[in-house]
Image (cartoon, rainbow, N blue to C red; front, top):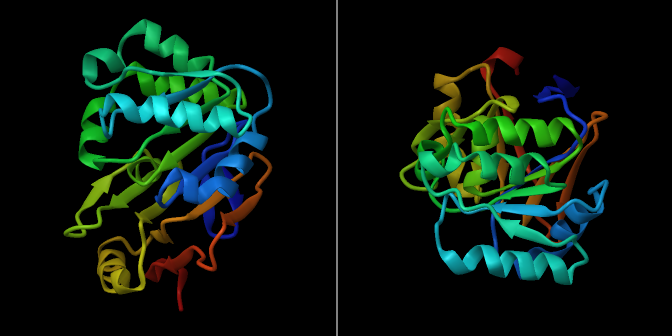
Length: 226
């Protein structure tokens, strides 16, 4: 695992970008920086599993192309069968940037759980691909993710070890976060507001990317002391 302070994340040659949410056009700086982390001209890939709106992925690709990203494709993963499709495995494994779109965390987990798509994401990341998780996609990459309403906690992949990811974080969610840390004292809670991204690099780099005055709120469980 790569480590910076109390945070540890999956070792690989790429970047993990945890985006709290928000409209793409309002987060242009974040997306431009994600594109700048791409190391080759391989296609980019969009995963629509959390929200199967057929137009959303194409809109994303157009937006990224306008920002200077390589050409790309929507990887048509909407259920377990498509998540195990060898063609989709190749699309993901060979991508330079993979964007896990926002939507329903439960749908995202149910679609990808135990499938070859996860292996493809790992292969791409190990080879240097940038992995961007937006909202539900960001929560997926933690060990746990907390939904906005009613604050339900879901198990994630643990790519960010012992992290409870709270996307679309707002100050009024502090009570929910503290209650969750009573259950998971070993956790590091990361409250990521809309319009803010936490960027985790392959050499231990850790940065906040945002166009706003908001920041990531880090809350440590009891394991870390006072």
